[in-house]
Structure formats: C-alpha cells, structure tokens
Image 1 (cartoon, each protein chain N blue to C red):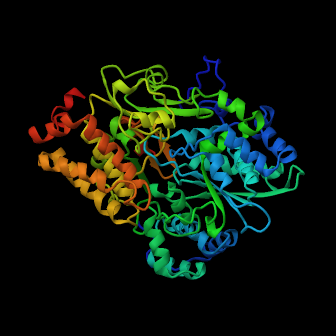
Image 2: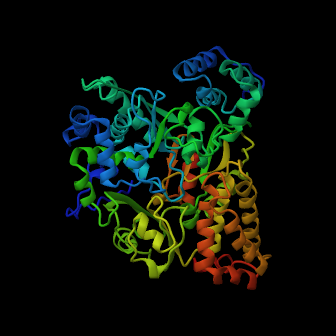
Image 3: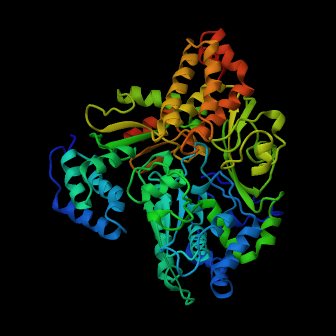
Length: 160
Length: 441
C-alpha cells in the first residue's frame, strides 16, 4: 500500500532532519537531504510533511516545493515499493532501449510514470545512467543492472 | 566492468588509470600511497607556494575535461588571492556526469578515489580555498559509497582537516549527493543546487571565480580534470605535455558505446585519432553492422562521418571538422539505427532536461521534438526540415542562458548536414524505413 499521505513528521524523521540541518553550512543548503529523509521513510514527499519540513528549514512551503518538483528523483506523488529507472538515453536507445521499455510496460501492465496496482513497482524513464559501455541499463532502487535482455529483465523483476 | 587499459601497450604512460583494476575493488589508501600517491600534495605543501602550483597547471596546458576545454590553470588564476579577498573560497568538483554516452568520471572515481581527493586538496591549496565539495549525481550509488569511505580515510591520515601533513594548510572536503536533473552539470546551476535552490544557470558576469558559491570565489572543475592535477604536481608540466600527441597536455579517457565490438573506456594520449579509438580499442563495428557516423564527445557534439575518422581527438582538432571533443566518449551510429531516430532520442533528452529558465530552450526543444516525431510518424513535410534548420540558429549560443540548448543543436544541425537524405526519405516514404523493416536490424 502507498503510505504517508496525511501523516505528520515522526520523531525519528524530526531527529534526522535536525541532524541534516546541523551538518549543512546554511539551513537552506540541507533542503535536498531533508527531502531525502522524508522520502526514505515514506517513499515520497506528501504535502503535510513538506510543510513541516519547510518550517524547520526556515523556508516557505512554496519554495521547498519548487525545489522538490525540480529534482526528478524527489517524488511528490506516491510511488511503489520499488522504483525502476530505465535509462532512455542515446547509448541505450542504440542497443535496444525500446524493446526493454516495451517489455517492462507489458510485463508490469503500466506505462512510464505509473505504478502497478499492487503498489510494487513504479516505472520511470531516467537520464543516462552512465554505464553506456554496458547498455541497455536500468536501476531498481539502489541496484544497477546492465547488458539487459528481455529474459534478464524477467529474472531481475523476480527478485523484488 | 569493462575497462581496458591497453595493458599490452606499455609504451605510453597511463597515470590516471595505473591503479585501476577493471572489475576489481577500488585502490585503497595504502595502495595509493605506495604507488606514489599524496607525493604531489606533500611536494606542493612543502616546496611550492600557491602561485607555483597554479603556474604548473597553466604550463601543463591541462584543458577542462568536462567538455568545454577551458584551460584549468587559467580558470584558477582568475581567483582573487591574498588576505583581503572574500572567504571562504571553494573548489567544487562537478561529478554530475549525466551527459549521454559519458561514463569516464565514474571509472576514475570508483577505481581510484584518492586520486580525485588528492586533486581536490591540491586545487584547494592552489587557490587558497578552505572548503571543497564533490557534487555527485544520485544514481552513482557505488561511487558515492567509495568516495565517502575514502574521504574518511583521508581525514584519519590528516590529508584533510587542519594543518594538513603538518604544513599549516587547512581544508575541508564534503560529498554532496544530488537528486537528478542533467542541468546540475552546468557549473553555475550546480552552485545553485549546492546552496539549496533550483538548479538553474546564473547569468555571467560576475564570473564564479569571483562570485561563486554563496557569493564567494569558486572554481568548478570536472572529475577527470581534477584527477590530472596530482600527476602534474608530482612529475612536472613538461612530463605532462609529453604524454600527449598534440599541444593539449596529458592523456585522455576516451570511451565508446553503441554497436561496436568492445564498448569500453581507455586512457590514451590526448590527440589519439578517432579511427584508432573506433577500430583498434573499440574493436570496430559489431558483426553485421556498418559504420554510419559518430558523436565524438557525447550527446553534446556534432556527428562526424567516415571521411573524418583520421582527425585527432583533441579540442582544437575536433573543431576543424565542425565538431567538439566534449567528454571524449564517442557514441557510434550504425546502419541498423535510423539517424533521425537517434536525433529524436537526443532531442527528447534535452527537451526533458531543460530547466525551463529561458524561453528558446523551454519552448524550442519541445517544438523540435514534435517536428521530429511528425517526420518519424510520416506526417512531416519538406517545410519541417527548413524549420528545424532555422531552430538550430534560434537556439544558438548567445540566445540562451547556458549551453544546454546550443549544445542540443549540435547533433541536430550536423545530422541535417550529413544525413539529410534520411530525413527526406521519411517525408517521401511517409515514415521510417528502419521501423517498417525492423528485420534489417
């Protein structure tokens, strides 16, 4: 299930946010790390949590939202338990990105930007993952997968 | 990991990759020191003042490896020096590496993290900086883990912190893990991101060397540029220039992707020819595919074709064939892929990654994508090609805040120059013959 919608910041989150702010040279400089704290606990950044974090950062919610929405790997909408980033850049395109993408979409029954009904996977296109010598490539959460073929993709999905 | 160091070819020195074990663990601190690491730092701190270090890098003719090719020593020499200048001063390493086709910085940092750290300390010493940042993209999880461990080791051994190596120099180094967006690789946008703002480019002047991070003097250098610095300081600028085939000093990490036999990266003398990179190191085209063209410097460079393969891959020579060295990581187009489709892939990328700050980029790139899609789908007209050509002028340098859009035009303009027939065929055949006949792929 997707979590986190209306919940207020927990004590653990508050402590971690305070720690990030303390480490940063200015409060504002901690904004990405603070958003990552929220995302770590909730997978995405809901409004209520963003507003409270803004107070702690000494920024307006609008300002924090403008940053949260700018960076592609901060999610302002619910995502699944695992986020698949499939590299759509030119080196992957040359050696089979279209087939890998198509296969992922069919297998999961979703389009790019969508989440499976069971909340297990969200599928997103990604900027070049920097492994062009082993294209095509994708990342699931923190795990990088390269030299993808359709059967390798099937095997990988089993693991999550 | 496929990283060939041409181990069989020992006739040329390969300082940047000598400690890198393809597929193996990163070079640790002890191994780094045993191989001569931190020797340059010790030499600089004990024997050379700041100006002398800058002068060595100037004389080495180290050109910026991020793609622009600006002389690193000259960049450093623009930083105001002395007691009365604004402080702290900053060195920022641009490890955003999101240029499609480019993967060289990841190899360097994952394989030999202390080389980058020593370079960052030396850069800091050269411009009298107090603080350094390594700005790394979020997806480089492994590189971030390796670097943060190496930074800790460097603090433990007093290569970082206060009174470094007992020589009175103080310097802090931090790792900042970002959260996506290609535009963060634009150096002024990167500074905005570090400050906790939207990563949009800044207008210049003022230049970052005087007014950079939090308004203080700052230099921003690419990973590969910084990695060269310890070797220049340890071995001298003359040695460094000898490594190259041309006037531009040092070796270069070249790479290749696409349908070649051995995609990978190689450290070679600066100025190695495109043909040698493609045919010798990348092993030529994969069985069954023919060469059509090559983007020599990542997505932000112009196609060159077979007649131009004997060009030397350095900044000056690539300009003579109307292209750019860029990151030096070549992307090869084969006869099984449609040139228009490849350009569409590139333009979709740039269009999505535009930060939206200035109009030509924000509006122009999606328009270009729409027209290319129309051509691809078969509803394009001859007029579209003229409009595409006009766009390459409208999005030229001078009309935009930064170089994202002008660099996006490199592949489009050059594709229209070299592969115009393919574009026109899409109009005549009302669609893409590569798609219709996928069997030929």
